[in-house]
Image 1 (cartoon, one colour):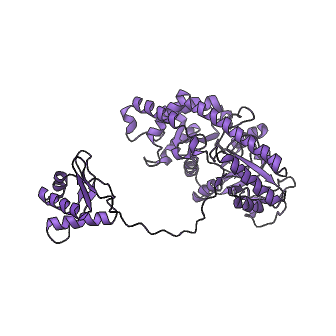
Image 2 (tube, one colour):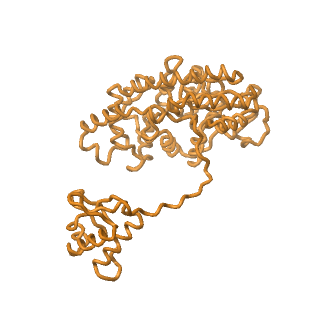
Image 3 (cartoon, one colour):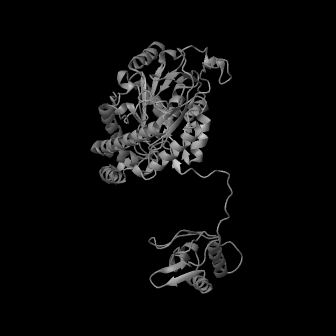
Length: 489
């Protein structure tokens, strides 16, 4: 049976009273077992006699006698004004340690894609939450609109137009739980019949979730000017791009290629899916506007706060062509996939009040300083390593001499720095001009190698945003020491 206390003075108790014997003895045994097994932790306050007796359907004196006996035995303590509690000296047996083969994390986390958790703007978020929840209508705490809270969609439409050059309206924005959720919804709506083109370097996780949806992906080569959009197959249903800052190699999509991908979309009735994952974080000059602003009816823009605020918030959005809004909302389904209404209201206030802009500007300065420090130290300590791509985002790619990627990964790990190699981001079907007949992907996907195909580079993907400020200098020292060891410099 379950018992609960009055006015929050006790706790809910699940007690097994089905054993044979008198009520007092059965209750004592049940309480003793709950304490012994650790379900009632030391210091836990038990319900008063009256409430426990009423909930269990037994006499009040029976409960009082049971408590008194357990106090006498040392299982419980009783003090005037403090009630009856589990004695501190009665502790549950310590759990046996679980053996694991997972290695402990390295001390310096330089893995890409993770903002410093300590940089989350707690005070600004708390103030925004207080204002938003105070002003929210009662209906905000009901089932909700699958499009997302109108307050957030209004704020996003204004912010994205001002900062990213996006052309949209609140009724064409659908709030989701992040970029991955957006891709799953789009894969469901577009269906698996036709393949998607994707950049030859990108997140394996994104390729994997498309594969789970039955979507075949065709790699398009990338170079310093971004994806080579002239190579997008005519029969592709969509192309997934990171135009502001190609992930992970770092180049922006050239203006001629921006026009070219939209020309492809119009000619083939295709769709451009623009992952604007860190479009706000460019440090060398003003960020380039979104491709979506050039043709909103041929482009889906995907964004989130995972890089700017925290991946723990699970808030993203899609700016959709008008004909895709209803199908995406239908695919989203009922309730479970919705982002928290309270978080949506808070983010809307953060955007509308300007607090989000201020936070992004602070982080932009911080990330730029960290990237500059990384670049300068590498130039001084390991000049054979070159930082590639534009000054943007939360990571940098370090170009290594051919054939040294594995050695560099091993050496930096020995020094305590966790980084990633570039190779895992390469599409398994991407062409290798040095080995055009190598079995690294289906021939139908690779196609014939061309003389101007970019060779697969060796490199490290280094996230400079994650480590706390006090650890960042040591993390860079460990990285440089490992690279020096690997390259013999």
